[in-house]
Image (cartoon, rainbow, N blue to C red):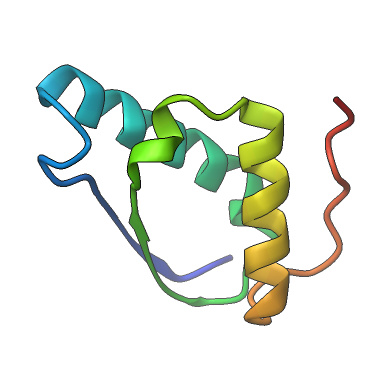
Length: 81
């Protein structure tokens, strides 16, 4: 069982409350996909403005690459576009 602490944040630079909540929902959905393959730890996700426009598959693949780079993720397949 993973013991992860998770934080999601989106500043007002992202946009109004609707856009900030949308950005955080996207981050939460991504985290849910990766959560079973993550090492135990504390994860803080900070939304950037581009998150509102980027395709979900590209966002998934970028997060996959970032988590592998920091050593927090084991084998997860890329989503095909």
